[in-house]
Length: 209
Image (cartoon, one colour):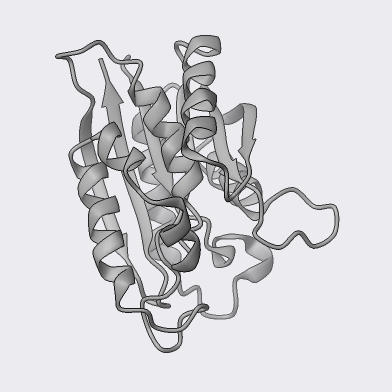
């Protein structure tokens, strides 16, 4: 079995406690579970990579961890470890975390809980910022190409301004992808995006040789 890196959203509505009478993210949840099941078909374990919450409230784990554990459970997977990086961690720290993860868990599939910009509409959490679309386009293109260098080129300050909460976890993933030898590249096997609430949600499944 090839090792995988799976990207899933951190939308709160993916959690049971935030699901209203109408499950607005049922299709998104199903897509994420399907990607996880395809990545680890033998119901094994995964390593979660999540960011700290931008604003810490109480003592609960970060939202990304709670969503990641829930989705993994729905896919019948266990979580072997959780790697938590500050949401505003510098690029070099993210790369180092990814390289350390790849070295310590050489066979484990990695689940990255990450969203794009939360400023893609007037009713978005951060309201509309036209710059969000170009940054998200770069983010999605990088995942489509399984391009670690393009992920590392995401600017921390700009991403913070645009509420791209997944920037740091995605750059940890780039550190994992960077462990692949030279000419042998990772490949994107599946990619899904949507932004019904002005937040870019991405589900992606990348495989490594």
